[in-house]
Length: 283
Ligand code: AMP
Image (cartoon, rainbow, N blue to C red):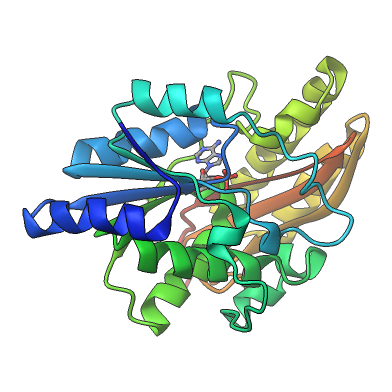
């Protein structure tokens, strides 16, 4: 596995692959790699000639008072996992490599970036869109892989790719869960055993909501999700909502609906979602 830390270095490596007609699959991550990340790499490995993974804790997407400093970092462990998964190129830029001190350009995807996670974390999706735009330009992938776990991130990035004509396809991979239903996440490392047990309420809430949403009963779905979360110990709900998966606006009967939850459990803020098909409206 090649490890590149500079933009010119990784471009030189991948230019050679491109000239040889090889397809490039790209998985952007913030490290602290787990089974969720590894599933994206497996999808890339199965479909592309060259698999590139970036590990970069992006300061732009953390707000003031968020966990940028505490975010788990373990480069040696990450590199050994990447190598074991058959990744071809790891890109680990330093912050100074990615951002000029006088940088003055930001990518903003209006609308969908301002709702839900965007409302709770102002500027978060500008940071995500800006870093992904830069990484797409540096790596030049044919396909970029993202997790359904971060559904709003997917909605933001699909729009950015469409609106700015990035020549790549976005592939979305299913959320990897622990046997308890808890979505695997780097931030689960912040949870004690008791908090981890409490956190299973998030997926139970989504399951309870999904039964109503499938029948087109979106208000009942939101009430059912709240009920499960309210009943759980140590869970403080930020939102539990049914939305359109592309716009995060009100869901449309007869179209797929996304049930999204954000909740604080101990020191962690957890997000999770499921998508359900809905019955067509009665004529
Ligand atoms: P992060 O390192 O948190 O920025 O995540 C990097 C990528 O891994 C994103 O596309 C996430 O959506 C994806 N991801 C994180 N957790 C999971 C999971 N449990 N299942 C599938 N994908 C995930």
